[in-house]
Amino acid sequence: MLDLCSNKGRTLEPSAGDGAFFNELKSRQADCVGIEVDPSVAPEGALVRDFFDFPLSEQFDSIVGNPPYVRFQDVTVNTKKRLKSDLFDARSNLFLFFIEKCIRHLKPGGELVFIVPREFIKLTAAKKLNAWLFEQGSITHFYETGDVRVFDGATPNCAIFRFEKGRKDRRMADGRRFVEADGQLMFLRDDHSLRFADVFAVKVGAVSGADHIYTHPKGNMEFVFSKTVETGTTRRMLYGIKHPHLDKHKDELLVRRVKAFDERNWWQWGRAFPVSELPRIYVNGRTRKPEPFFLHDCHSFDGAILALFPKNHRIARRDLIECTMMLNKEVDWQQLGFVCDGRFLFTQRSLQNCLLPEKFSRYLPSEKHKDVA
Image (tube, rainbow, N blue to C red; front, side, top):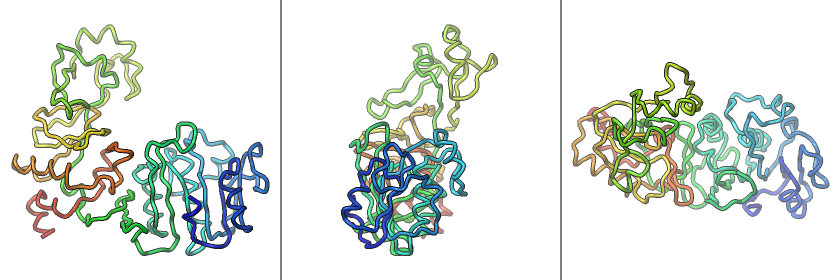
């Protein structure tokens, strides 16, 4: 990771911890500053202070490190008082604040080399940060670690990236192109100029909050669910009815966390699915299925499933089949940032805001097809 650093000059490690990076940096060059807020682990030579109280007048050629992964609600009171930014809200993890502040500490042409949860490239909470980061410079290197646990604890899948402040060339070291679209970051090898949202509307399925209770042989409705892509089968469930089977589970249903339940609605699902007879393509939100997109005649679907409704409501069945095949075979979802260690990770927002190859313009509504042509 330290080998990604190409600048010479003043270097910062903003969250030194026990000195894993800081000590190696000191051995490589003398002009190195380390900061650690916890005096019990701070390595020799590091400044014991809160990084978010460190003045921005301190500028660096290189910043390297592994910022802490801490949920906003778990951030210490003293640090939280110093987290003032228009880019974030109460959903934002502490490592995102580190990214922003470090970029502000970089000199023009300075580099930031971080290992962080790879989810930041798609996170809703990082939407403003990612758009701002793209304005400030460019990512030149981006490597995913997959399911390898780089650190102890519950830290998600990680990525290592190098960012260069002020860089306008979007070409990366490996030939990919660094792209930002509505706060999502992508690293593309091919031409992607068509907005997914111009071709499809992405809808989420119904959420019961207690599938094991609502699944019932005498259910009144069939649902596309997580196993449908493998088996082609649906799941029979109780939906929208106050069935006697639910009575014995009332206490459990009242405390579901999907939304607030009381005596008036305890038997209902937490979220409904969009009722529509329009054609759609299904995909699991999380799946290792090599070809994750599929068709099914059932129009009800649960929360594990996303439905892609073509904006061209008159799309022919044969074109819907062809479009599904193209989504499976002709889109590199890895370079779009949707694959981590062989697992597809789709959300409504991330799909809606990604880019597709120009060849998908054939599925646009006719008036938009004319605009593209």
